[in-house]
Length: 295
Length: 138
Image 1 (tube, chains in turn brown, blue):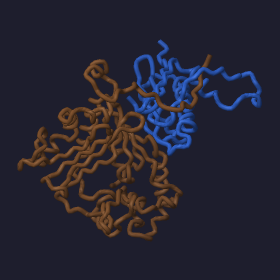
Image 2: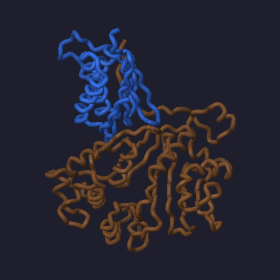
Image 3: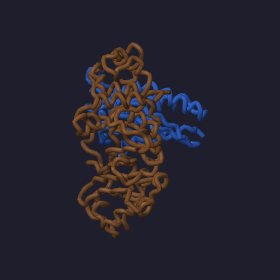
Image 4: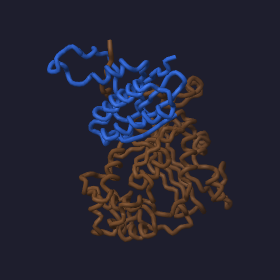
């Protein structure tokens, strides 16, 4: 008797998980993955104790925020958490001086349909830098990464200042410690991997550097790299027809990212969609779809 | 541990083959036959992942890792496509004429014939196919 491999219709669940965490269940299961919806159903103060681990304390210290009370030197609460009962979604925001415009940390993550966790949004911004306003349309509504429209004038200013698309402020320079902290948090939940959907080419490249692989979209990234080589279809489409399609854009991550944000993938009959990155805890995949790239 | 990650595309197969050769060469003393068997097994498994596992999807990554001990080599292939179900099936009829043989099935047959142990797991974090091949004749 020999075996062959056939497509299975769905993945195994590791173990059925109860809606409500109980000490009895935790006692029996030291490794079964816990979902955010289970934590969100816990009493408020327990929830706070769990989610307190999410923002690196050294990052809070940079802004003189107490890592336990989340209050600044003036006594104001400078970290907000949204983690409603019966929801699998968590949003955490931290402010440098307690005013909304000085947000330096924003993270949104949620349970996914398979029982693992997705990072939906992560913004680490330097509140000392001027905001470029490229995340807001001229009429005042948010652009949601360009999905509801674009603010071309502001985008061009951000691009000329050296920012990639989607970045509204300068970098805070804390991605590595934030992701390390997030991994430690997920390990405490019994999760072994997490997922992220990059809205921009530059984000995908940055997360590759942090050890992510692709659950979907690796081949597209390879195709993009190949077509941006001299003579390729994307290279030829960098024709200065818009400020975001400069001829030298092919040789930097930012140049490619702005051109892709501007819709250049039409030239290869592709779209920037359906990409899904995955990080296995403690492992670096070593993906490099744009080798030796300059940002 | 040796590890390489490439896209789930047929053009990645030669890179996997080269990487196996490189890792085994660095380890040293591994017979060409063993290296060839590993290359073919990985080729077959990855072809399955590329053509079936990621079929209809925007293909993701394949992570190939090799670990050596004094007696065996453990090869792990991780992907994030559709899971494969290891299920019993008859061996291909090697005596039949070419026109009478069904297409496919030989790769998996070959893997089971040449590897000493095979394990497959699939869960919410991806699919892992592991082969173990004894390499030390002593």
